[in-house]
Image 1 (cartoon, rainbow, N blue to C red):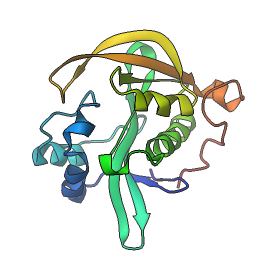
Image 2: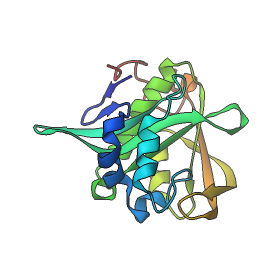
Image 3: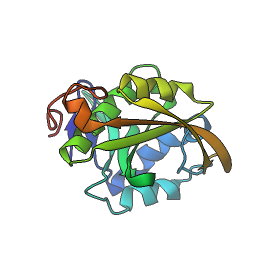
Image 4: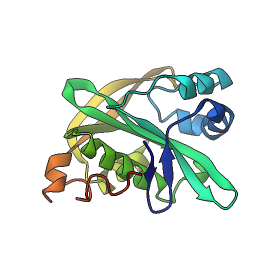
Length: 189
């Protein structure tokens, strides 16, 4: 599956992407905000990530920034099975690309795929000390659930408090909150 957004192109990871992926995520400031990525992030971690089997119902994508000389990897975004029957949205963007709206744009494109796959309840969370990710989620129409959960961070090697958000994609399609109400496959290619 491929997704084109206004400025980004989201695509599956391929085995030959490992070195470029490693260069994008090998940054303690990025990994400390992720639950499932170890620190230090080694070349073998990147090789594993790009060669693992994909789940068609819960895809994830490399976020690339197209340019005249190719599309460089600047992050990752996807959905995964979550707790309590929800699907969980996750994303990260390389630090040199922070503050440009790429996380919001990439996550919004992934939500359009989640909607097309028939998912309804989407959950996301951010560590309490990463409020920028909370701003991304609110821009996407997510609402805080009021719940703070302890969550293990592989990158930090400890449990960290996370703030939980959720949205309903079916409600978003009806204009009742969350999402952008776009047609499900508008961004899919």
